[in-house]
Length: 308
Ligand SMILES: Cc1cc2nc3c(=O)[nH]c(=O)nc-3n(C[C@H](O)[C@H](O)[C@H](O)COP(=O)(O)OP(=O)(O)OC[C@H]3O[C@@H](n4cnc5c(N)ncnc54)[C@H](O)[C@@H]3O)c2cc1C
Image (cartoon, rainbow, N blue to C red):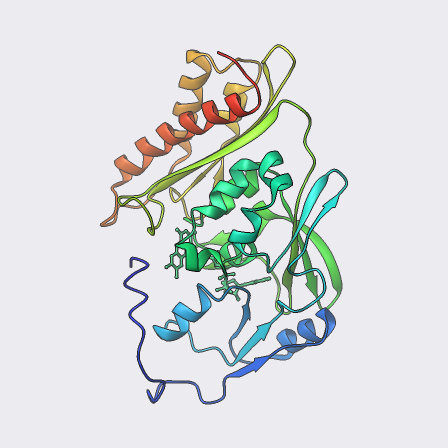
């Protein structure tokens, strides 16, 4: 289903299938929110930007009994410097993140992944936490968060805990958070000089579509321009965003010469296990994932100050 298909909203809520018991709650703090979510017997959803939730409601994909709005709680819309990195509140919208000079300079690939989501209107609401917890294998902000080693701060009935972003999606529409848990912020760690990242996706149109394939690459270089650390992740080519360690090994120790790039491409292709659907075949998705990983690696290398 394309995004614009899901936007054919019904003009009335008088449909008999509309859940008359749906409750919207704005709790006073995280503990109350966790208890509400834990005690709920029916279906619950967190409302961040609502750009997935409201579309799913209108198209009757889901009829939640409880909607918990957390945007007003402390820190949810803040971006703060912490330990040389950035803590991004779970309700920070893409448009706000895209204007933050510090995050843009340190993690440009994370910002470009988020900025590819939707339109100007969607950018005003959509969040990284919502993108991650919607559980789509094609979620645009997730590959670069994974290559950034981003960590989600999760609040639940037992209080807060930190979880690697890579451990949260478990399959299409599925995440590992327990009942009562939700994300309060996402932490992007500090990085050394001569380090950068990039994210690219392929879509059949120029904008407003779901990735057919995608790749994020994050690199660290030494003073001579040799790659000392690499992270590679691909999107939309497996049930979840997939990290490709063999591709990382191919890049480390090189200046991203032809041999290293060929190793990256073949490792990425080998890691793909996509489906064929109306938007792309297995072969097409696999091939384009390799091409995107190569291009993203070269962009990240140049951004990190590498010269070929
Ligand atoms: C027109 C349009 C175009 C789009 N284009 C793209 C695109 O190009 N790429 C793309 O990846 N997506 C796209 N999307 C999907 C959507 O905009 C993104 O997934 C967005 O990032 C969701 O964020 P949100 O804050 O709106 O999430 P919401 O809709 O508020 O929530 C989404 C899900 O995450 C859960 N959730 C929200 N916040 C939290 C939290 N803090 N803790 C735990 N769970 C939480 C909710 O319960 C829900 O299941 C598009 C949507 C529309 C309507």
